[in-house]
Length: 307
Length: 323
Image (tube, rainbow over all chains, first blue to last red; front, side):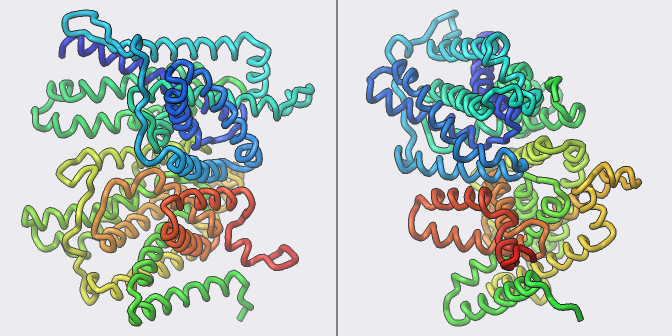
């Protein structure tokens, strides 16, 4: 196990963790405040990637595309809230799961209709496409650093928004007592729609950031949404702090598990056994962690104090 | 004799049609419809068993596809060993494979149920899904059994008197199994055990205060449901003769749930009706367009938004709005 590989994998884990946080934060906001399970949150991540890809080709510039695509995903989020989520708020979680499951099928197929079955690669501007030589064997793509920077900035912005602004105060108040907030004359429906749109923009941003690496593709949202659910369950549903810590934890564990678990296993078992069991265990690792956390603390690591 | 309810009539009519029509189609040269009916009967067993926990027990399991998949692999893996490692003939005997499928899924349901049932609400939904994903990734990572690409079952289960290579025999087995599954769930639900289960769905605290160990009742129901799904999986493996981890993808679990909701939860015929309508619509739509998921998804949303109580609710409601 050499050091530069470890550093690279740590950075990769951090990057995955931050992307997961962007998706999970919207999910946990919507769940914490609206008590709404949104399986289709991953589709917003996918739409963000596709819209950004199209705009990159239109403008010829990735950054402009991101700036324009963000409000568009916000609007899509608003529409989803208005026409699908809002009628379901008073229903139970089962109806949420099924309704948004239907929405996934619709949005995935719409993406298929508009952008075709193949994935779309997103070109980066030259200054982002380079690599940083940090040591003899330590090379880090510049764009990955940008993802980490943007992820941290978004997380910081979100913390500021939730903890230090009037809107954030209303959001927190709505999370702890919805009826009271609306009795105090706050337009609760508008607040809900805003939260939903904000969540959509965060998920969209994650999709836009990942698109240049993995390309935009149908079904990309369905892979990350399940992991994002693991994150918010482990972190405690409705807790922003929990989502952040759990996202980094899951991102790091998943990435490091995939690259180093076989080495670890070789310490205690034969090489053959390690090489066959390590991939299986590393793929299941985050689910094992989730099951462990839930069996010990059924409310997650950092359950919100309210309610 | 008491007068049969409207829902009772629907049950009898649907099951009678399922008994008669597919074999008639097959014998008149339309083998395709028998295939369709076999598939929906097998899925019907899975939805009927899911309904036991979801509809009557109020436990929203989002991982039931894993039981189906495990059941199918309990047929596929022994058959694979029989073919390539010349394991004894017992490995392709249905009398060994089916108990294996039921046993493994019951054990898996017991172990995961012990953990899952400690949680409530959305945590339960997600942890059942997490366990299903674990199985999914486990199978994906075992290259010996095909991993991602799946596994072809060369030899169907060998059973006395029944030849599963004959489509009519296979359908007969699936249909009879479905009827038995429906009767079994109905019997369970109407028993004292089932009453406690439904009571706990309505008011858990009251049942606990009355002295019932709700956790244990739910666990038993969960195990029964998982084992029945495992049996459905064993049949499914025999029907498709190809199994892959894709069978246990979380969207498959979502589809099973949808079939139950579509047909109507906590009814005898609902889950079957849901499976029938789901498979037929899927078949019809996908023959028109490759974009069939679009109308399908819209339909799903419409059912959730507007048709509460599912098809059984719609059909058994008279003008007064009562059953």
